[in-house]
Image 1: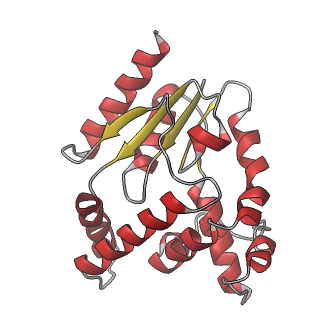
Image 2: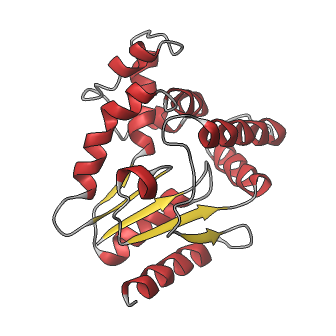
Amino acid sequence: MIIAVDGPAASGKGSIARAIAAHFGLPHMDTGLLYRATALNLLETGGDPESEFGAARATDISQIRFDDPELKSETVGGLASRISAYPLVREALLERQKRFAAQDGGAVLDGRDIGTVIAPEADVKIFVTATSEIRAERRFAELKRSGLDVHLPDVLADIRTRDERDSHRAAAPLVMADDAILLDTSEMNLEQAIAAAIEAVEARRTQ
């Protein structure tokens, strides 16, 4: 069983996808980490983020540790959003994601183009969203817990910028697949959102 979980920044799709994977005993891939690792590699090697070819070279992320806390930083996240618009970067990371999705027994992947590009054949597709204001508040609280000095208006502006960039990029834009289940978590806490997602997967499996 392949489960695709898509959605915009700070929608909670990663936490929901991990919970789904744990519930059904499936491997999970946060595909956004691949782009964050590429962005971090680009920063550490002094590459030019304005160069598509330079960003594509940075997709050799074998030396990046996926438990590096820097991957979760706003600087890396913002750069990842920028370079993910490059077709060469997406092409370089495409096969790795497709192989993960196609493994025996299935998998859960979350990102922005799983149900439309990476695994359009997925058995279940969920599109997780929330208002930009709610998502900004969640990201703001997360960053404050990490000890960062941030301001809510700046976080909201960043969320809206990422939404615009992700939705309008030429390569694999963020769109909801026609056969995806919409999960709006604006009025839900995380536990409620996870329960709703698992219920949606169960319902789709029994159809």
